[in-house]
Image (cartoon, rainbow, N blue to C red; front, side):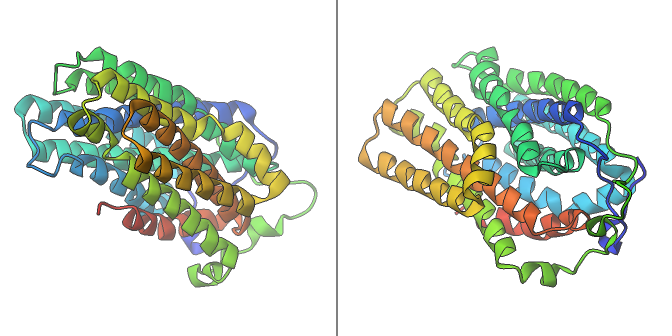
Length: 368
């Protein structure tokens, strides 16, 4: 696919008809990417306990989450040069390099290398997170269903990531290097799936010109004057900041402060990841029925429930329930925010506004 300079007003190519096959391939690629990232969420803070300075055990994970957002700042540039498929493939290749650095850092007991690997892994996930916008181009008749279909791939990733991959390494092994070796293999599977995706090569033609496709994109300030656009960005930022503050330290807190075992900890994180994506088909139906704002409000209620549970007790079942509620909160707020943002944009404007918003989302959700 010839790359397009959306920053300069060139039209964005959308499919003439819905391509469910390519959307499902993107969902599978997202599942692979998220399985690796979710395993890192469940194990990365534990993997650096022997190398990290005191109090910095969550730094690699925080770097991964920040770089995940900052990746969107340069995505438009890569899309212009490499095209959409080339940009996604670049992200997969960087993910394989990241896994290699995490293995090398754990072998050399070098915290700095582990931090670089974690940051690069987060950056690669930033590419993968853009799959949902690629899916909208492949299924223009129903953006909510396209986004929910791709995010639903995270269900399998949530099971394979914290549930299966950590079992490749005995609990007594702190390094977790086998997990990241398997991660490189999973990235190869993702690469194959992306190569099979058929991105559109022609504009929508229904006998009339689609003004939203050929009209040059508006400036960022003009787009941001829309209250719905600001609300969408704040919703996605809140979903990440709340999740980072409550989820990132959970594995360390469960094991080191409350003596919960390695397996219960990883299964708790698996439940959290599962609940981040399992509601996606339901959320995709709730948004057209009730509207994005009501779904976002429901997500905030789940987030409040998470805080209440964690305040009540440190029992294992409390952690399980709290992390499940946190997963629902993220799903409702992030998916509804994505659909709301898409409704305020023309096709050619998505890369521009995502590049503007993502670093600010990352900054809000950064380490405290």
